[in-house]
Amino acid sequence: MPAPKKKRPAKKSKKAAAAKTRGLDALKLSGAAPAAVQTLARRIEEDGGEVLATYRDPLGGRWQLLASLPIDIVAPTPYQRDLSETHVARLADAIDKLDRFLDPIVAVAAPEGQYWSPNGHHRLGAMRQLGAKAIVALVVPEPEVAHRILALNTEKAHNLRERSLEVARLALALSEMDDRPEKSYAEEFEEAALITLGLCYMENGRFSGGAYHSILKRCDQFLGAKLPAALDTRRARAAKLLELNEHVNEAVKKLKERGLESPYLKAFVVARINHLRFVKDKTPDFDDAVDKILGAARRFNPANVKADQVARSGGAPSSEE
Image (cartoon, rainbow, N blue to C red; front, side, top):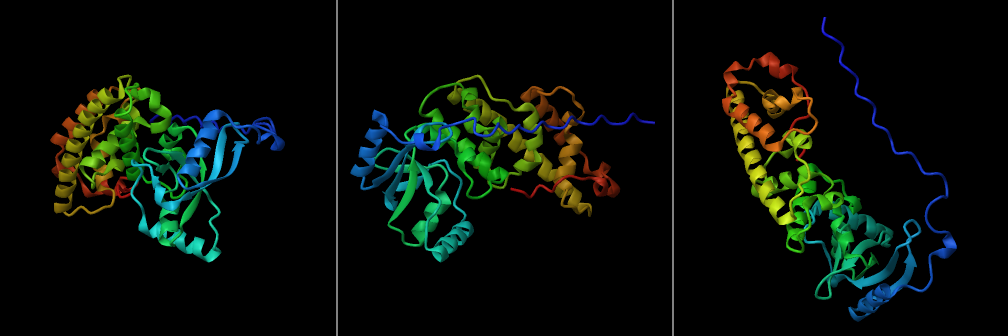
């Protein structure tokens, strides 16, 4: 009789802080703003906007400005995901019915009199669709806030493709600005695998990242190399994944030719070639792991697969992209 499987320890949830132990009191949010904030306020006015309030954030105590900005000088950060026209139309309809814009976007000052929003692409699109002349924004002095796309973006839930593309575009943009180590951007990128997957999506828009995400989460870690060099490594990794995807797609095609139909076919093939399911090492080497999986994909023989094996396979179909 096989030994019973060990239960995985439950993830510890983050404990709530004790009530009223963090941040500033309600009467301590105003005061004399530092010089950098005053300079930003003057720039907003020079750019045709107006500062409505200057205050300190009640949680972290950082200064920020509530401002009205001409809508034509506000744009999404250049590495953001593509706009969903359906979501924009839905937002525009809701804002129009209420006849109020109650959810200011976050913005940072950008070159050439522009302001970039890391979290307001869809609201900005909705306001433009309604013909608005201006938009209200929380303008923060720290430009690096624009890099926290995933953490800030609550307009519309990201799928894996959108998250990966945003992170890869951000990595490419940052690589032209400085050469800090990739791992120093761990908070901005959130997950190393997203950079690699994003580069795959940039090469092939139909790439099935969801089929390989769990593999990369095991073996794709943030790199200590400077970001430009790290991106070269990731391009090589992406090339291996794209080749792997071609072999998996070919295997799925041959299974279908044999009359096997299931939304789980790709997941089934990936599971059959993925040796990491049986590897206890939590962080296997990327090249060793993927090369072995790639070799298994090349050797995969659809003729050895029985219909009942596919029927018993589980997991989500790889259509969440």
